[in-house]
Length: 102
Length: 284
Length: 195
Image: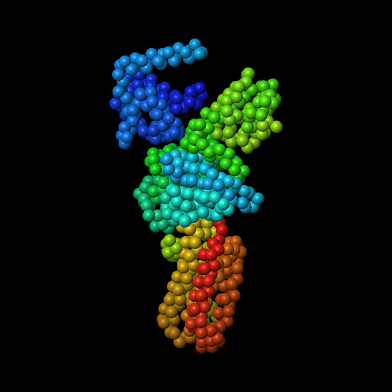
């Protein structure tokens, strides 16, 4: 899984992580059921705070991209194609608005 | 969420310096950066936690226990790295460790030896011949080899080269893979903490300025920059501190500020510390 | 924990071969010198060992290490130090007895070991207390002064008569010594040194 963080981005670190993981899922680089690194392991690998990675994972869970199973960790959630399509549309909309400066 | 360290209303007065109403807590499983300029009271606070000094008022609880009544039990579970550790200087590392290890119920000799190897320390070397960096590494090896759940480090990276500083941070991140562990890391070199700390407690002149999680700290504080004419009196009042030059000004605000031609930027921990302590207060 | 401190200090002492030699073996060498081979030698031995114990390590400096590197309270350290000194003096007394038996007990003053032990115990109490409260340099100088005075006094006793310090009874010396030692220990516990 590719996560590359920028200190200069206008997005907070946790937002960058959320975006990049979402991208990976929607592009199919990550499949439903794939395990994600633990929040601590990710924090160590990216050399950031565990609170940040936890926040990113919480957000991903809230948006139903990721689910966590007590005692086992976090996994890519099963995506049904209707939901995927909806999410893709949502993302495209968001990016268009961004480009238009709204 | 349980607090591994809970300090309330700590007060200590001595030799012209006062630690005044210091309170903060470190939840279990996180790293807290304890930052402040030299002489701000960091070392005094740590000495009070380890009962090397008695407070005039206030309470300190470690692992939920009063730090004086349960001093021995608590010290078993704490790994402490002092700023300038004092050992029996004529002894070799091996002999010094041989005196220390019997005191710890959870001493792990093979883990300790792993650390020695990893830090490239020679067990037969006499302690008085160790460089500052090696002494810190030795202190760290000792601190990490008896199952400590709380690591307290007083300026561990002061006087060390940047390469080792990074290595040290990697080691600490490894330690934090266990959720039961916590680290209290006091330093005036904030770049170490900019990325890896979970919580930041900032002390200045014996008083706690702030104590909160690092992410919200960055979201809250903003570095405001502008040209000389942009620094209105109204703006000055909103800034915690400001520095002015012929070309413009730079200041810190604890909330987003509006203004024409102002550049807002993310402050570093160093900026936050600097403007609280040195930049002119309210630009005056 | 205090016992562990005592053991640790003993191990440190025993591990330092050069110090051990200088402290314990030197007096026997000194027997070649006039004054040292007299009938008061066992007391000289005890006094000399105490001198050695107190000049090798400034107790206030070792308190820093003792409490920062070891998971003990200051009180543990104080009690441990007192116990360690007492054990060292006791061991020296036993060494003196053994030596006397070998060399022939009639060569030495009567009652010398028990009385020297009692005084030695009192002395270690005093010196340990000084080491804990005075600055290291001051403590070291004071300790050496005290012991040199005592040493001279003891040497002076040599060959002065068959009984060592006839004005002092053995029970008085032992009880007084133990009492004094306990007194200094209590003082140390009630008023632990600050770091």
